Image (cartoon, rainbow, N blue to C red; front, side):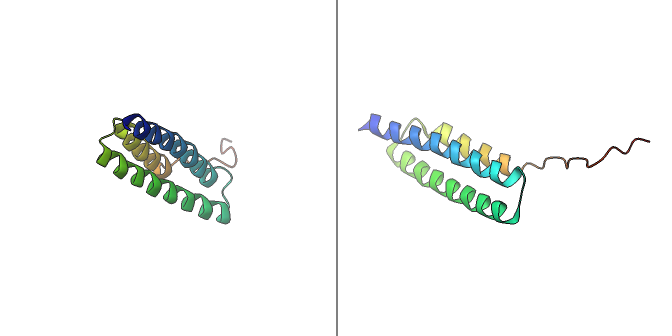
Length: 93
């Protein structure tokens, strides 16, 4: 039973990494209003699912809880990180 819980937590962590990264990519690269809105919603759903799995892992006392929590935190930092605005032209005269 313990190995099954660990496997579920590991799979959820990997799926959370993929979908969270995809959501950040969707919001950041060539942003449009629709893609940004859908990317943010996918990101929130991903974090809520990771939180649910973390709650399940905490009750089951799973060892994979630490990487799951780190992933949630790093995804949040990745979404909120302010990247510099690209220069449109060269201002040097």
